[in-house]
Length: 196
DNA sequence: GGGCCGATTAGG
DNA sequence: CTAATCGGCCCG
Image 1 (cartoon, rainbow, N blue to C red):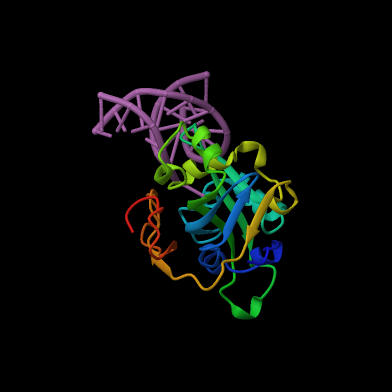
Image 2 (image 1 turned 60 degrees about the horizontal axis):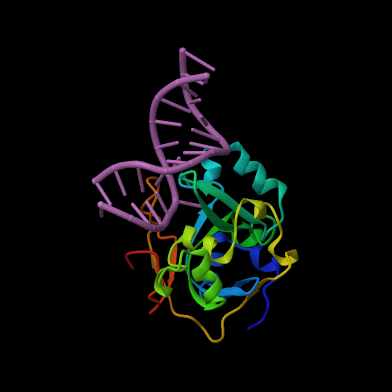
């Protein structure tokens, strides 16, 4: 139940993605428990934007850990990531990298009426069970790209109560590096985007 | 400038 | 199963 700070995003993206499971993510009057994440690493990961895009590589070098990386997919869907920069510290552990954590699904816990309004009165189970659904439900869009979530009015991120049980699987919806087990799920949650 | 391809979603 | 819809990248 403690507020996370940008220090949380100074660690390896895989650890970060795993530890975000069970955290409460709030934007304005809406909030949800994070139940599905995916890690992407800035180097050695063909599925990461940094693999092809100079702009993504510049984003990593030019921004602080925790910065929001928001991008438009299929010309219509905003997807939300946290920038993770483990590379600057903790070198002794060797496996520390830079990258991103994609938030793929939430269990809605607050502002459900507003979420339904934004999501065309969709059923509760369909409000945040996908990476583009949750940005719509929370009101996240391109204007948030590059901003620091911890300085945005009304944004909160707090650690779980207790210790969540986390499941691991391969990432979905991509065509490169489909065998990396870098997708994390809250055990028992029905809110995940698909499979499980 | 043109063609192609997405970290997706809602609706037949 | 497919349409929707647009920014990046890779050519030429």
